[in-house]
Every structure is written in structure tokens, then in C-alpha cells.
Image (cartoon, rainbow, N blue to C red; front, side, top):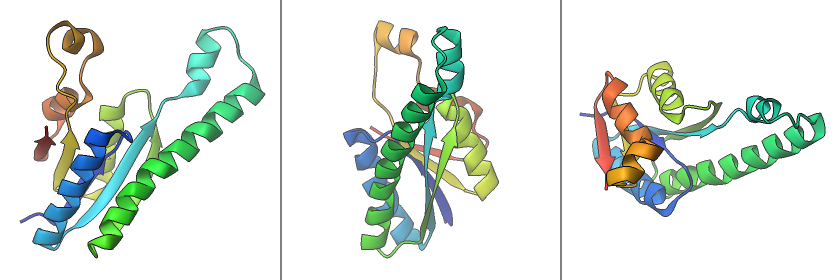
Length: 146
């Protein structure tokens, strides 16, 4: 049924749970997976705060890329252990949902499998939900792991 599953990660335990489920599902369907992580655009954030320093920006960006590689390595290892073909993408975007949707479309994915932090009430309203935004704007099926 599914041939290519996109699995976003933020490095959390909930994300790792979704990765394990996504890899299992891919194995069952004989599908491949693509992992994606979105790094915020620190250049804009630093410039807005008035503390622009190219050295600081470079250090922050390097640290964010190293964290992203660790997050994406978890997907690579889970896929390798299950003998599931896998590639990964690291995008720079202040809107993770947008990076997820663009990657899914660019890679020709037919399912997005992601986790939900399950925020409720005021926290959900104030913090928003990348999962909700993916559900709202995606033109391909989305599976949410709770």
C-alpha cells in the first residue's frame, strides 16, 4: 500500500517512538523511509534581536546541524536494523510543518508518519501544533502516533 514514508523527527522520545513504528510499517509494506528534521533560521533570529555576530551565528548553526545529524542517525539506525531503505534530509525553516510538507512532496512520499505531543487547552492554543498544521495542509495521508 505505502511505498515511501516520510518520518519527521525532533529528537524527542515521542519522535523516536514514531520512528520505530514508521520503520515497522515500512518493512511490512516493503516501503522506504525518509527522515526529516527542520533547523530554525538562526540568522533571522539573531539579526532581529540586534545581537548579530557572524561567529556566534556560525557556532549556533553548527551545533544545530550536529544535533540534527544525531536525530537523523536514529532513523538511519532503526531503518538499517529492519533492512528498510532510508535517506534523510535536514532543512532550514522556521516552520517545521512547511519543511515536512515540502520534503514529502519533493521526495514523492505517499505517507507522513509523525508524533503528537498531545498538548491540550491553553498550551495547545499558545504553542500551536506542527502536527495540526501538517494535518491541515497536507495533500497526502498523515498518520499520527500518540
